[in-house]
Image: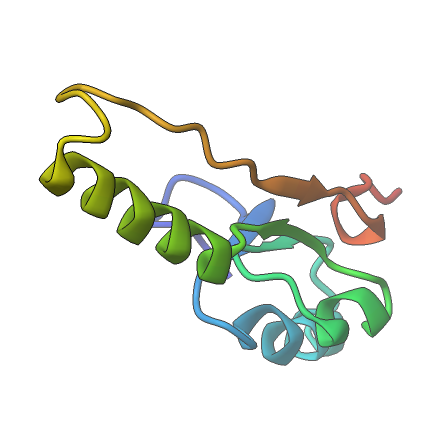
Amino acid sequence: MERGGDGPLDALVCAPAGAATEVAPLLREAGLNVLLASCVDSAATRQSDPPITAIDLRPKEAGASCAELLFELLSGAAPVGTERVHPIELSIRASTHPRP
């Protein structure tokens, strides 16, 4: 597996939900030593073998916070330019630990 002809693939980050857990066995079967991470955390990424590193963007909380801020801006309760920090969590797991 080559990355645009620049050399061997050494890491893969999967964005769609479920993609990393589908790709993991294919990488293993192909004998590729590739670090793997997911942009979506789930029970499947935590229970995979090896467990897959993932980012939890907390989309439900982010959406609620955006809607709340929009309401506050439209009603004048928050000044224009108000910013809110939305915490995300990176769970580093065995899939991104370098392997021999």
